[in-house]
Amino acid sequence: MEFKVGNATLQLIKSDITDIEADAIVNAANSTLLGGGGVDGAVHTKGGPKILQECKRIRDNEWPDGLPTGNAVITSGGNLKAKYVIHTVGPIWRGGVHEEAKLLRRAYWNSLKLAAAKGLKSVAFPSISTGAYGYPTEEASRVAVAAVKDYLRAEDRIERVTFVLFSQRDFDIYAQTAKEQLMPT
Ligand code: APR
Image (cartoon, rainbow, N blue to C red; front, side, top):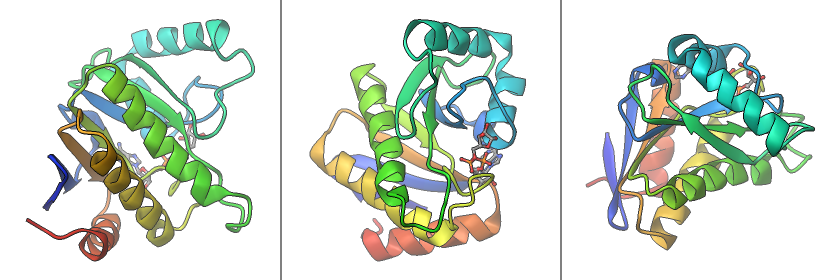
């Protein structure tokens, strides 16, 4: 499913994000940047040790106390098809009254900003925070689509953003949200 947003294309697909060939895929990391389960586990398992080595260097040099929620850092893609991995930390859902929407929007925005600064043209996102971090998918999809839409309308260096959903249920939720917020081409 595709939508035109500014000069860019916003795409939704159902897949494993570690199979995606974008310039960068976004990892749903945690503040330690030292790996975990879900997307994080898949990225490090398929990407290989190079990614973790670079994450450790980033921790030592830039974020000794851990990457704050909403921030993003970039490493090579290791053995992945993607050239780069952008690691961002989404908010843990705690009922929606602890600035979760603002932090989730920031995670998408900072990931796109980092990709643009690196001169990347295509970025693929998983559904950040809706797994282990418990963010309700419907609400998260509204924040995610709005953040990407606003960014692509404000800035034109990125040409394609893909939401990579891991289940049909998540795909259907994001598709409904995208139809509500965007006009399909
Ligand atoms: N490709 C695409 N999407 C995936 C994949 C994959 N290989 N694996 C899981 N997902 C989906 C999940 O189904 C969920 O919809 O990504 C979404 C985010 O789930 P998580 O990976 O659990 O990420 P998050 O909710 O942000 O929690 C992050 O979990 O894995 C740990 O180290 C990570 O502590 C961090 C926390």
